[in-house]
Image 1: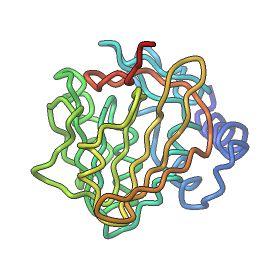
Image 2: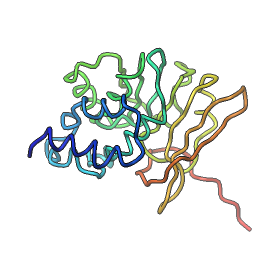
Image 3: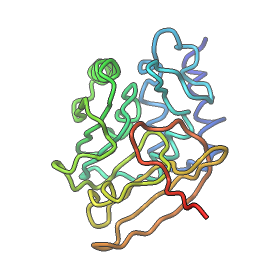
Image 4: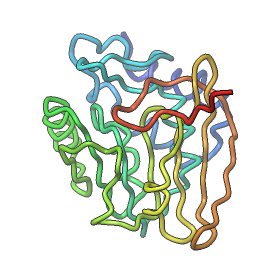
Length: 217
């Protein structure tokens, strides 16, 4: 496989056509070596338009989904970011290039070790990978400018929204199969939030988040 050609094709044939127009996001998707964050057994899938299995029931989201989430998060150089669902560390690496600091939470100990090693090998030093259930966020280190959920949830808990700064954004994939919606939620006041739902996709569930409320009639 010609790795550089595959990387180019990923950006031009998968990511750019999915309304990812931010030149910095496109640059990062070409710069950060995705193949170095993929398990050895699945290297051939690094640039394919699909989720890459990581083991332990986890996966890397498809490149176009990660790129679109990165674009919607609109992270600035002075901002602090919380990611929930570290996986292999690739999304944390992308966020780190745009942020001042990233804290990323991963519930699986093996994946924590994998992500830490990947980030160190990539020379990224402004990411802290923590072994922790991310369903409640990290209130003791908040509030955050940006929160990114690298997986889907049935609904976004109010406790996570409370960890956003005023003007802060939370990006998540919300809903039930067969179609889920990306939610970009901006905190506009103490108890005010604005939500955009700019695109549809499907993603695996993050663990231990609440299920959607259901009413019985």
